[in-house]
Length: 630
Image 1: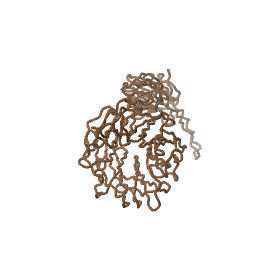
Image 2: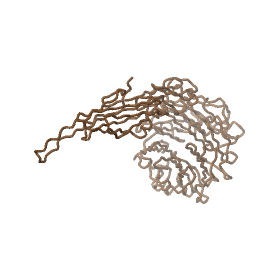
Image 3: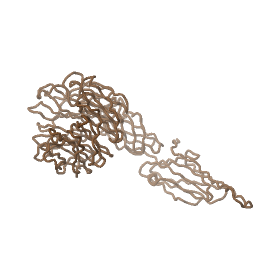
Image 4: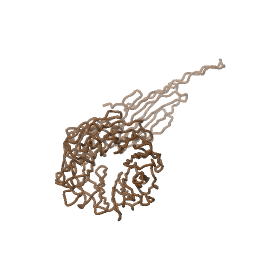
């Protein structure tokens, strides 16, 4: 079977020609030069100038090229190929060389590979011929990982395969299966990366993920990928997180690794799970005598940073570089605060650079300002904190974001120009621009939130009960002139409790409308009109919506019903979409507790869901969790 050709090439026909002008009419005209003819060995496929040669990675061989020159000129051979490609394909040759033939030897190589070479033969007067040869060292593809690690069996999800020999320069077609069922929309990006969509329907449970081409196959074990049923199925019984009296739960996750912090018995505690909440490490204390509050946690691989308020005045942080097994000593981020009240710490990171911003100063005398600092080594060393901007009035409700180019903070303020949403920015980690008004002036500003991806920053806020947003395409440097109405208060009532997410140019928001409805809005593409879905199926007191995005899947959780001091009917509710938020399942409750539930925390990994909350089933409030049925 002749495989398709990918390389491009052409013969180079270069001949000497007569010079122009000048005297010397008695000089004889130079003889015309006829370029050499390059003859490819019969083992090659394709031609006349684009060839292909396929040889198993574990084999050896030699190819000999020849050339003739009608003028009898001596010939020089040149072979061009990248050094890495030469090594990967096992090519051995001498270039340049002067001979009537040119030989390429092929050594055994460990792995399949491809390389495209340009072979040229030239005479002394510039006549030349050249061909391209695509070398394919054939062999079975390899698969090393799949992302995400789960999907719904009935709802296809985009997946990425990592491995080797997945493309071989376009010489092979690699197929993918999940549990034996063929994946869709398979695209080999390069030898190491392949994208596809999971099959539907598929077998619920562990699914072996395999790759196959004409030369063999490879597969991951079933434990690497799981298909879950849809709608989401959680365990019948909830699981306690704390010792029975925890509060102020903060949690973050990266794949199957979760990090949770909470306050119990006046101590800030940390636990981690390596199996998406099935089991947890023993609790370790992060605070040291102070009264902790408002903890935040940020992770990147094994790098973990936790920040919190101590005694209402200090901003403290501890860092771990071993995945939360141990933490360095606490660092005070605002040592010069002088006893000023501090609150609302926020963390954002890009790689090992971590930013922390908080409110500091007395609000009653209009001295409350956003202060910020950063660390370039995951919280090992922090810069001296600084006030972000002085608008001449209190700052409130700030939100923090960053990428590899800059960091930005948005906040509410009401200087002489009137109340509004302001932004400030830094590219130096500690020198912030002055605040710039981004919203219309109004006393009804609130719910400032940001989300970002790839330099595109979405800034969202409420104004007089309406939800509005603004976009920056360059990491918060320049912004649209006028905000866009995201959702009107006329529809369901004044909007509060806003949480936002963004992915692939889309903007998603979940919020409470009119104090008793939970709703969702999305902008499906830059510049598209907003679309809305009401998530609640009953009119009741509601608060604290959480929102998570995983490819085509969206998950929303919130508290529905009155807490009533712990004896009310409040439950955590979950609604899910598999079509980017066009439609959601009816909200579902779960668990085995009869007490009120409040303050949900939501984490998602593929199709897996983890929920934590404050629960009143016992003598006092405590922290409980539930997760997707395994």
